[in-house]
Length: 626
Image 1 (cartoon, rainbow, N blue to C red):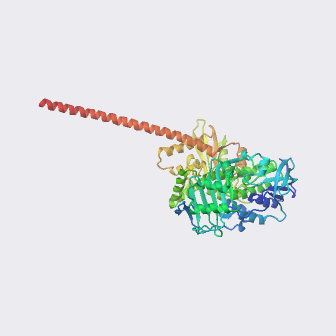
Image 2 (tube, helix red, strand yellow):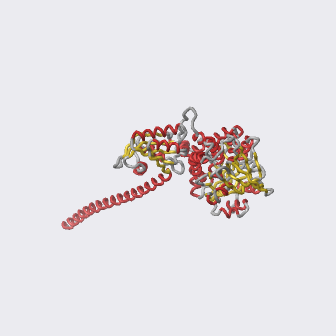
Image 3 (cartoon, rainbow, N blue to C red):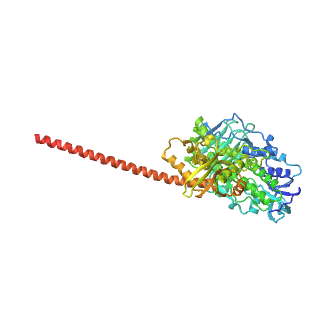
């Protein structure tokens, strides 16, 4: 689709003056685009709720030139306590040590100051219709205070206008088609004054089944509050005033000192927020000359902590692809999505797990959560839990740098444990498959793909297999250096918590294991080998959240037949097979136990009969003598 001019007067309409919108404007302006930014609100927002900017977002912030203006508000000496309504407290969750603690307004202020002075910003303006042809997009803009509408033409339209994006609704369809509700509500407010009876530097967490409230402490401010609760009817929650829904959600029992003060401050605030928790799920983030960025395209929810980071890096990567393919919007969009989507989907999956940390939906989850956190205080178990934390890898992964070609050198291969796709490339000749492994390793070194583990497997016409070569970038704590297909590829199938199968069973390779562990290893091996056609030699690789379109092309140039399999689908199949084996094994053990008892009973009966006969004979003999 060669449909874009290469002159420096290309105009892009950016809808939304938030993080994704301003980051896009800054980057595209550097590339020669002329941004026009429209914002529905009548003025720029300030303040806002707590957020964290992680290494993935910090890398983009640094390249945009705003990182030095983002001062971490974390108080390193601030304690965090879990507290109940009776004001009983214990040491609380301390998992927010990664990244910079900020207010949303901190990032927006830094971005706003970085905008070029000639950028056209129009407040109280929204799009009402978008039409496009091969050369441009025609947008009708409405100035809300006057209801005056104007029509303008743009080379590109970016929707950066949040979860309920107007651009998405106009260009892609109604919200209901793309919003995936989690059936939770959140409310945030910035504290207007310190809490009575509590120190200003204390982080406070009150967690109950299906509801929670968090107070985030700051080194230089009063802090912010996050209310979160589960609901069976989101629409009903919006039918009342937010404070009424909050008070109903937290029950009629006495609130206690902390919760009572927080609800009162929320009710008195002018800038409190209240929203449902929804993830945005879309097959495509672009349509012709229209694209979505940030929450409008992929909202990971506040539970992920990655909203700001993905908004920054997603906007930067889009600009990079537009720079590489200046004359082909479709190619730029496709390469952008191909590189970014696996990463974003991994972030969204982790948000579903992290939600349990914020608000366990049941008493069972609450107890399990408390147990895990209490055990994490033990150094040995803390290291194990740390190793299970796949979200930490996501938060520190610079997907933008890894998606760009290297200049004059090779970047260090990334070590990663979270794998989304199992790639299988089948070849008629062994050398081609071995060469394909070298190509894949080089692509990983160049940042074109994220490679965890790979092996070259030869499968005979009779179905027997042989491992010819292997590669692993998995950290030693997460797997094993033992040879063999199982030791090499177990880590390709990560669970919902990022816990490696390789971490759970791979460490047992070469040691004594029970039947269940052996069954799991054998099932993984069988499942992976079954992906390879008999009579071929194949490269099997665990691929992380990275692009593989370039790699696929190189595999095909070598004569390979390339197939992709979703890791979570394979894992589900393996889990199902293992469960069948487990049930069968349990039934077999029960049968063996029953047979053993029957045998023991039979032996007992035989001995008892013999003893009884001898006793009866002795009694008869005694009577005869009498």
